[in-house]
Length: 352
Image 1 (cartoon, rainbow, N blue to C red):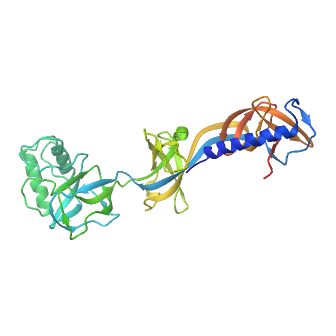
Image 2: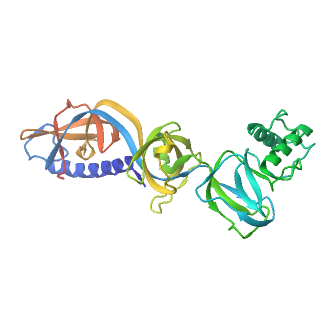
């Protein structure tokens, strides 16, 4: 649910309706504005001077980034799988089939073939860069699998206690962009694993929040916008909007089919967020700030007979109608100017 500006908009509509009734009660449309002695409004509120922030709140979900399926690279019995919630880094075991470990290496492309001397391609370069990062050097990382690459692979295989073939394939390694967090195990230990069938669902290790905003409110949260996130344990954590979806789709609320965009928040201090996963949170956004302006409660607005808006200024037992120019709506208040208004004046509002 989106809050903040939507609430202000509804309040403005109600204020206009109430204001029209108030004008009718105070006198006909033909009466000129000025001092009146027809009775005081039911309540008053002060004209305030200060900063007005265009803000909103949105319901979001706290989780992890970059969900990804890892499929089995070999046929056989799954003999070991990592614990859900654990983190796997480069060269660590992802899973085992028939007692043979499949290890994680970093790279954006898939491991789709068995590599050997003479092969060329991006997957070769990915493998070589991982070998070099692990200290198995003696070659220049490039797209060609040479005898030098083969020798490095044999040294790596010896260190893992594997047969020294000089070849490496999907039954040995799987690529992911970086270290992964195990979200779920898709094949139970003891079950048969099939090539291409999911074994694990992983995510990245970075904590993120995803949420939706009406397209009309999306200017509040451009990439780089600073936000705060209310967490399930009652604490709040600062974050930054890291991405804004480019496609608008109807929201999840069946009573509100306004087009919405999906946004992602990254945390400034991820370690402070805790271990919550797929948990509801509230994202607090602050957009434009109008500094040192006069404001009144939104429900103080009156729809004037001749058009435009005004407020009832109350001084002692006298009430006069003042036409005002409206600025930004936010925080249940509206920026006003004109009519000789000044800080501290009292304006009429409905009784609370």
